[in-house]
Image (cartoon, rainbow, N blue to C red; front, side, top):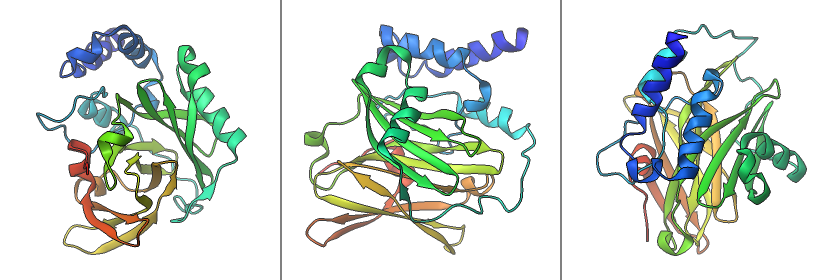
Length: 260
């Protein structure tokens, strides 16, 4: 019981950097839902918040990481053997069902799914509600978790032609290990997003092709919790005129969107 009160206090303290949003009634209700939710659903952000970045509502990353690191991960067969760098589309009805299990009840009637993708036994969905962007991850056992939330995302006009804003950039634990989740909003000229992950020292790890639809993108890939502190991740935006905008650091985008 004392543990629950301590965790409650830690999570509420983590929201202190964003008082302007947390004091609004919808945000307070959301925070209360997070405090009451299953602790296993907490994402594990690897990037540290930088003073001056646009405020976001987030869980206490250090606390969540410490809790998750203390839990043994059970590997069943080769980890993420079904994962693919290229996504498969998720049927619209299936994506809507995932969003319905992820979005808070008061907002279900206004939810709009913009991305639904499948990689092996897992699914990833981006859903929009008034004033919010959410990502939802469906595990291979069919459980659904809200993996990130972004308050007041930038509009298409603010992003411009070649902009990008991340709405998800963190880790999540599953039975098979850890995954890195990326999602965001794109400028009007961006038609594709490639994500390149490199090991420390510059060694190439993998290239992941994101799902892009209606000005949004999403992708995920397996990444060990130890790798998350040493890997570097960069995005390349492919434009409608054949041009590219390359080597955009994901960690820097997490702190500040690219506009223009």
